[in-house]
Length: 549
Image 1: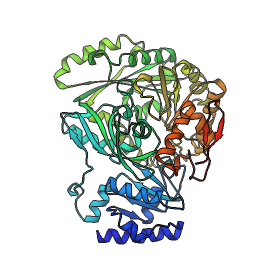
Image 2: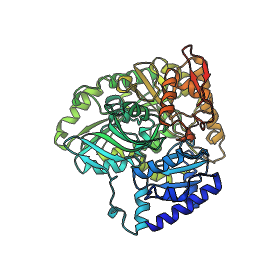
Image 3: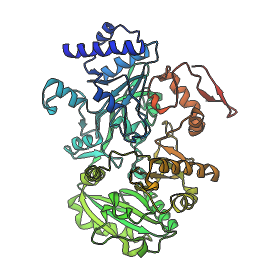
Image 4: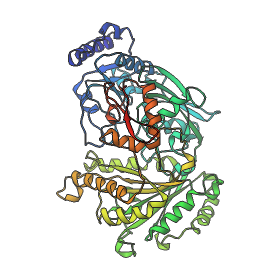
């Protein structure tokens, strides 16, 4: 504790010199922060970057908290600062556009703190006791999780009890607080809703430094604000996640389509089966677009056998584009005898290319962790730590065919440098009280361009080229009247954010003023500026006006 106090005093003194922080260091020490406030150049450098590698912003310091109380005490001190000290919570650093960065403040590293604590105490990580390890409640079927915990660790802990969360993201090395601040989606979303629809309770540190427990019944306005709130209203320090019995195995199937209409019709049929008994539906429905022959046998598509590669030229692709439907059926070994019949009955209702069925069978945990295995391959080739101009859109069902013609068959051409996902979701599985914005239709699609910028000399793989394509797609949607909404949104101006939130903006602004009135949280999102700014609000006539903060 003495060493921590020394480091904290040193760090705070540096902050005072840098930004004129008017809080007496001895007062902050009396706050009892048990974590570590670090000025280590390696810590600062790590916190200045994210997975996108397109933005860099060095914080003044990095806080490694040891508890929710640490987070609350530090945020409260920042809230009391007269010099606009900002605070950004960072999970696994998997944001794309610098959303968890800050220059005039401190980044709170929510993930990996146990490793830091173990190193400081010279103990093995597993021997460091704390109250923030996942705690599974078997009878109630939920788990309490530290906001910075990675989903892969949640899965490992819950599987010890034969349980698992219901809704996932495709990549498990993301923090719980990070995905819940956005929504958290994958192929299970059509049936269980996004991850934010599977939360019973949260502990949240608001922008005032208050540590509050919230749920449907308690502090409900904060609860719904924080879910999908892009970190604007508070820092999630604990989440209570719903669980279900974990299946043992997964039958993983991919089939191809050359006709987009047939592809989307089948996807929409499959998600309409949500709520049906398990034998009568698939458990996961996704899909991807293939505009480049090389892609189908690469990375996420490595599922296809190298001995039997799929070639676009061998199939009558519509406009040179193929579509792959990806579906799974969960089962236990005791039901192995009936799984084939259940799958066959469902496949008979689909109109994919008959010769294109590819199937594999694997343990449940291996399926959920499939992208990490692909990550390891890319890391070994030096293809992971590159810029990622990823771009995600929610596209209304009524315009998905227009999007296909204008984007997949036009703007993208015949080359891409990463997977293009496309799959539908049911709007009734989303709680409209949350902060997330979705298209105003019963069914909408996620279109995710998960591309990497590579320095190969090929212009179509360069960062500027891919960013320009993203802008082209937005412009196409605007000109065609396609009312798409960005998922994991990123905008440069507040006017664009107002347009993004639409009718939800007034509520979003009101919540901001209630829970983070000085606008010190998550400034990397670029939605609000320090409290001296005058944010836009939408009045009853749908015109923009300003209100002092």
